[in-house]
Amino acid sequence: MNYQKHKSEESVEDYLETILLLGKQMPQVRSVDVANELNYSKPSVSVAMKNLRQKHYVTVSDEGYIQLTEEGRALAETVYERHSLISGWLVSLGVNPETAAEDACRMEHDISAESFAAIKKCISALMETGAAAAE
Image (cartoon, rainbow, N blue to C red):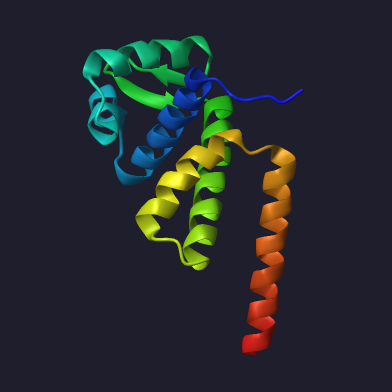
């Protein structure tokens, strides 16, 4: 039986990835920062933050600062690794960087762990071969 993630699961992953990346750019992340980054309305982000808190992916301080929980950070880093690797791979194949980023954003949610591991292994092997050839 094939399994496809629902849009709500993709949305959770997108929010977590965004919080992770914003956290690398600024000392504190707030809902307004997420709304601005994703170009979503503040009420939509507020509802999403409630959902992420209920799933124990984030905590939100009294001041409104968002922190990823250990589980939330692990999921965000997995999604970001997939996005980065797939996007870079597509660019190396000659795909326009903007298109590669958009495609990677879609692919990062639906690819199985097994397929991603195989792609990652293949890319690593190609890079090692290329590095050895350059020496």
